Image (cartoon, rainbow over all chains, first blue to last red):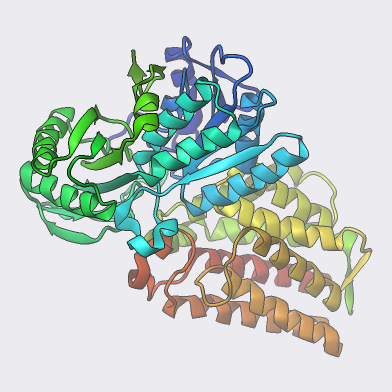
Length: 331
Length: 212
């Protein structure tokens, strides 16, 4: 294992220290060492929070900032933050207007958020939630509630954060974030596995010369293992999974987000994006905005995810609003 | 004896800690097969934190369960923090007013732990989770409490029921947690939570037997 680290048991704490120093213009520490908050949060707005396991940079802390999340709870690597951390994030973000907790569909996060919501209620804070479930490969369409949240969460935070910044009330923020994720579909292709630093070896395998279509952000098995293909063939596979599921159709205006899984060179993401854009154009689907880069990763996994969100007037306005965080800067 | 003193319960808690510490690597291996391999590490971290903070202090069985549960809940996170946190704090809640703990009392404590757990997860017997270990253990102990069975015998039966429950997860398809995404591919492997739950219940039973 070739990693830059001191002690794997405290790697998350050490990462956070560095993160807070490097981005001190955008974020700051809170009393809970596993909660960070945005600097200079505008007064009187609905709070927006998220949280999740570490190892997915820029997610989740990288989306704490202006017109995005106000506070973020940080868990161990690939492990949900505690209920206490979600609660403290809600407290850090609450201005008496309620808090929208926008997070991904994983059993640990579900339990901890559920308990945090209860505890917040006792503390007089209303927390409402939206659970992202954009990963098409993780369950059939008729069981959408079982699907995982992946890179589509970035668009959910963008939309929810923007709605709150516009002055939307809690129900409006929740409705906008829910609409964002309902209109979003994702799929991933993994080329190599990832390793928890404290475990020291990958806990799943992707053989050289093969790839796994539909892989999850923690190596959850996908829908098919096949021979490694060209970028164009991968693009077609991804489009063929994502487009029919929603389904995106001729005349739709969409946001396209292509994220690396951590170790894939960003250069290759553009090779992939070129063909994705061509395939979508061929179908008459118009790309209003594209994001290409490492937006939601899985440590040192190689591979990429494709996320597509269908826009309406409201989503378009919210997506186009400026934002400033480590992971997303838009002016 | 047909009871043990709640106040004497520190050794039981320390035995549970030891059970987890000794099985850290094994739990990691079990979890690595269909999970992400960090179960042994996370459990060991939480239980060892408890040991570090409380080994030089005096505490009763129910107080120890509450402190251990609180640490798991507040400091471990993941899935296992709230799961074991709720179970242990639920047990503590049902036992906090007891001076002496008999078979029926212990059964009621475990049952309340299971109830608190099922407040946050919908898992039932057969879903390949730790409920498959815990639920039959509760049933056996409740029956033993009702029939006035000898304490040691009741605890041995509970251990056997927990083991049988743990082993039953091998042939199941996971319905909850990360491994549920694997569907059929989760069959043939023990559930990591069911395995750690069996270790904890076994250590608890052995610890209580030493006090009888």
